[in-house]
Length: 191
Image (tube, rainbow, N blue to C red):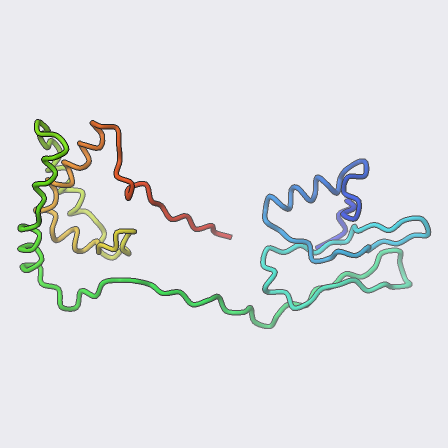
């Protein structure tokens, strides 16, 4: 909020300070709440007194009040007493209330991991121990990834799945290709 001495009614008018200010504030995703002239003379009208925000939903109203005291008008903003609530979101997780490590490991042992041999008949796993160590060091209190597999399940089955995972990683590196599901990411902007 303030008198920026950069006219946003005619931002391209020399010395183009309004254009520079608009570009700078756009880069920070700020929106101007004032869009009427705030300085009026007999020969010109300019928008110099500004209020910017990056949280428009917290604003109830804003505007300009003409005064007879100065050639600058009064700018104002009224904030909401409470910001509207964000939409609720569903958090997915697996309940491990009835988890049986013994049954889980047994199921993992009969999984058809032998299909990895289709990638390369001569390929020999070289990093099974390293992969197993990594799986055992996983923080089990973290959330699931895109595959919705609990970190605890990965840790509990480390001895069984370390070799197939090592095969997948080594084959991907040797062939210079990665499974499409490994290329997935989630980006969340922080303001």
